[in-house]
Amino acid sequence: MPAITREEVAHLARLSRLDLSEDELVHYAEQLNVILGSVARVSEAVQQLGQGQDIPPTSHALPLVNVTRPDVERPCLDPAEVLGQAPAAQDQRFRVPRILGED
Amino acid sequence: MTTSTMSLPTYDEALASYDPVMGLEVHVELGTATKMFCGCPTGFGAEPNTQTCPTCLGLPGSLPVVNAVAIESAIRIGLALNCDIAEWCRFARKNYFYPDMPKNFQTSQYDEPIAFNGYLDVEAAGRTWRIEIERAHMEEDTGKSTHVGGATGRIHGADYSLVDYNRAGIPLIEIVTKPITGAGEHAPEVAKAYVAELRELIRALGVSEARMELGQMRCDANLSLRPLGTEKFGTRSETKNVNSLRSVERAVTFEIRRHAAVLNAGDKVVQETRHFHENDGTTSPGRVKEEAEDYRYFPEPDLVPVAPSREWVQELRGTLPELPGARRKRLQADWGVSDHDMQSILNAGAVDLIVETVSLGAAADQARKWWMGELARRANEDDVDLGALPITPAQVAEVVALTAAGKLNDKLARQVIEGVLAGEGSPEEVVAKRGLAVVSDDGALLAAIDEAIAAFPDAAEKVRGGNQGPAGQLIGAVMKATRGQADAARVRELLLERLSG
Image 1 (cartoon, helix red, strand yellow):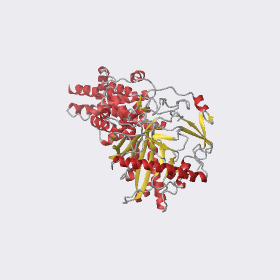
Image 2 (cartoon, rainbow over the protein chains, first blue to last red; image 1 turned 30 degrees about the vertical axis):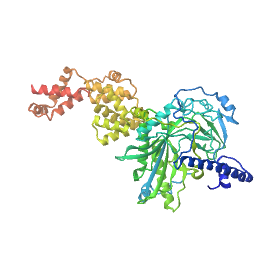
Image 3 (cartoon, rainbow over the protein chains, first blue to last red; image 1 turned 30 degrees about the horizontal axis):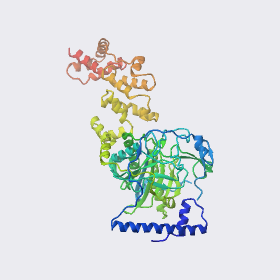
Image 4 (cartoon, each protein chain N blue to C red; image 1 turned 90 degrees about the vertical axis):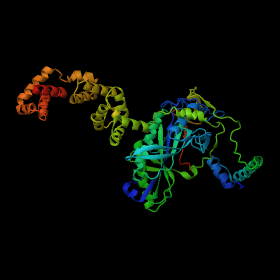
């Protein structure tokens, strides 16, 4: 199984808007490889248990489907309370840094 | 910033060398009372950030629960689009950093859409086009950003943005076509017809008002060109958020010309999103795709899978109304009109007006005559939609009824319609105020008939001799004498009676 590279970590960091130092990139690449190696071992074990059958990955811990709610209104939060959590607000809206231009 | 239209080949020149391939992605906001994953209301136009809760604000510890009506609507849309309905499917997180979603992801569906493999037949350029549907999936709308600063109020050049999360989490259905090939020169028209037909369908299902001007329905138009006679698709551009039927047509038209210019120059089309400009019908580049497509989808752990039972799907199939295409065919047969006339009725937006007028007792041909004749002409003159004229189907039906009862003739009916449009009141009121009732007093008519016979003795003699041709001249004279207020049929009856005795 191919190891995750420093470049891939840098790419993921960028997508996650994390500013990582050179040392951290290398460090996280090593850590992620350990994690991926462990997951690969689980996959091997599943393959052996499945005896050649294709066992799909588990995405949910509970065997439930179709949990829904009726289309009925519930109370909302007070906007003052909502915006009170924000670092900046203006005109009853969240004020955020410019969106494009950051790349 | 916008590509100059001066340097572009004409539309015909572009089509002489290239074959357009389209892909249309339409987002429909469902008209549910509450959001997709929480109980916040969805009403349009509320004060900013008053329709939010911990779930749609993405606050820690909040958990989404799916709106049952949204699932039902998604399945009904899928069925109406002749899709298969998934037996089991999941939601997925589409991860991206953009403040229009406070969670840093949008809950969507990825490789397991609720509906897939369908089609929609649309009419354009005098024939039927089968538009293949790739998929229809469920997701949530994003918040609304207002960009502040910069010259234009657009994203580019903005100093900061203000975000309102009232819209964040409103249920969306995204409907994606397979590549549409073979439309050739009709591509823009087919694109427009598809979006129009889809809008009709959504409205007929009652799942959304699909008002494009309110953003309840939005179209992303993908377009690529390939040299005529070749198979391989070219690189596509995606024009985002095209918000009217006319704009869909214009955006596709412009992109065909722009791509042709790029290819003619020997350059490569850049795969990118583009913005459409209503003012001059051009597009300009948005963000370049490549890295933006790295959404790192994964199954949403907070929502359990959706597994609609086959019984439920069958039950929902039973709730589908008569679909717009079938309805049009039925009405055309009922009204006995040609394909061409039906198309004119559709183009004029007169279908529902005629249906309503007929439902109020008017004969179909009469209802059609008024809406497609006098009223269509008037709407055209005033440059308004037919439905926006200050006259209702009930009033038109009343005019038709008065005519059928012999109280109005055609000429007087026109004057009554004119009076109603001028705001003079109901047809009855206009008749009374303007004194437009047909002269049905036989005594008055006979006096006028005798005058006419005296004035045109030759004509009268011929009619007496059994030649009815010249009767028209005599009737015309009577009509003139009564200033058009006589019932022509009655005049003819009385005249022939007079001359046969």
